[in-house]
Length: 320
Image (cartoon, rainbow, N blue to C red; front, side):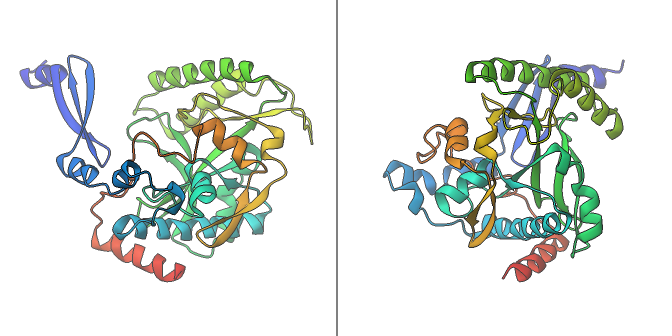
C-alpha cells in the first residue's frame, strides 16, 4: 500500500450532499456544514418569527430560489396527478407536504421537495404509467439510488434537464393484520434495525438490480409475511424498507388512510388521506408548533447551471 493510500485510510475529507463536508478520521465519520451554508442558515428569517412567537400558520411563503424550486416541483406533482388519473392509480400527499397542506395550505416555507405515497400495488405501476401517459417528455418516473446510501432505492418523479427537481414516492405495504400501538413501536424498532443491516450489507459496487433484490428479499422475510385479503379493513399499513424513514412508528391504521379525500395545496386540490390530523400527530406531535431546527430544503443552496435554470424557467411558465 502506498503512503498516499495509507494516509487516506487514516484521514479523508469529501463532500456530503450539497451543504456539508464529511471527515473520516480513523474510521470515525463527522459531518460539518460548508461555510456558505452555515452563513445562510444563520440568516434564516424564520428563527426570528419563532423567537417572537408568530403564529406559524401566518408565515409568509418562501422567496427567491427556494420558491422557484417549490413551484417547479409543483409542475412535476401536477404531471404525476394527471398520469395517475389516466392510469387509475391512487396516491396521496405524505410527510412534510401533507403537513404544509394542513398548516400552510401549501409548502412549508423552508421546504422545497414534495412527498407523496402509494400502496405497493400502484407504486410498481407508476413507471410504466408515465411512459404511457406523461404529457411532458422531460418528466418521468424511475428508481432513484442515493450516492450516499446505496441501499436507498425508491421511485421519484424526476426531470431530465434538472436532477435537483423531484417528487418522492414512498411505498406503503399492507401488513396483513391490525396490531396495537405498542406492537407497532416494537416492530418499527426491528424494521429500523433491518434498515441499518441493509445499509451495511449494500455497497456502491452492487448493481441496481442487486440492490432491489436485496430489499425485496428482506421485505418478504419480515413485512410481507401475512396473507393480504382484498378489501381487508382489519389491517395496518407500513412503510416499505426501500427508504430509511426516521420516524419512531412506521405503521398507519387502515381508517387513517381510507377513504382518500382531497386537500388544497398551493391553490390546487390533491389526494389526501382520510385523517391527516391523526397521521401528522403520530409523526410530529404538536405539528402546529415550530420545529427545533428550521433548515432550508434539499436544493436551496444548489448553484444551477444555465441549462438547469432554463429548465426551471420553462416549468415556471407552465405553472404560471
